[in-house]
Amino acid sequence: MSQALQSLLDLLDLERIEQDIFRGRSRSAVVPRVFGGQVAAQALVAAGRTVPEDRFAHSLHAYFLRAGDPGAPIVYSVDRIRDGRSFTTRRVVAVQHGQPIFHLSASFQAYEEGMEHQAPMPPAPDPETLPTAAELMPRYADVLKDPVVVERLLEARESVDLRYVDPPPYGTVGEPREPHSQVWFRTNGKLDGAVDEPLLHVVLATYVSDMTLLDSILLAHGRGGWVTGDVVGASLDHAMWFHRPFRADEWLLYDQESPSASGGRGLGQARIYTQDGRLAISVIQEGVVRIPRHQ
Image (cartoon, rainbow, N blue to C red):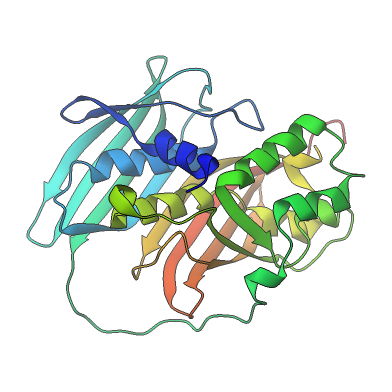
């Protein structure tokens, strides 16, 4: 396992300070706030640690309430809303400086057989044929002029191998495209031993799901986003449904699109498939997407 991946796992390994209260820390962010995927993943860890081991996360619904402070710990308080025969429900509130910054509801289910169908996997190239982040970013040195931004983008990709099928939003600034984006991702290293548990794979997918979901909104308007400074954005809410087992250390296709943007907000929706074509996760997120006033 790489040191970068171990650091990410350490970040997601919360400290238990009371029976249903946990404390997490943050890592340096590209923007001066806590990365939303980190808070969502840590909140899911907190919820999962209060649930019987035979129950698996099948959905989460979350709201981002305030920007998190990367320099302060985050306290996660878990409410045990329901423990039924088949389903377990938890509510988690993340608090910093005495104020809630994030709210999550998560549902867990005991395994059972049921009806089966799924939407087919869309065509996508082999991920091994696509450039890594370290290979991709130098191609766009003319728009990625801030070395701090580049350094932190590359740092975020050290633990997660994320590869764009088509150029990212900052790669085609000024050229509106179809509001559709695909990326392949997996952890940068294998998960095994004591850390290899079903909840961890779900938590890692939750972490990555906030990285690129709003890209398709930017593509429709030919904008590069926060990387180029031509859009101000932030996640507002986030929902995920976990349909089938998967591994976060094996390639997953993140197929994303935006059906609408209006009123300073944009909607992204996506499906995540395993490399052999199984639909593993559905995702929907709305975010603030504003054009800076000086433009």
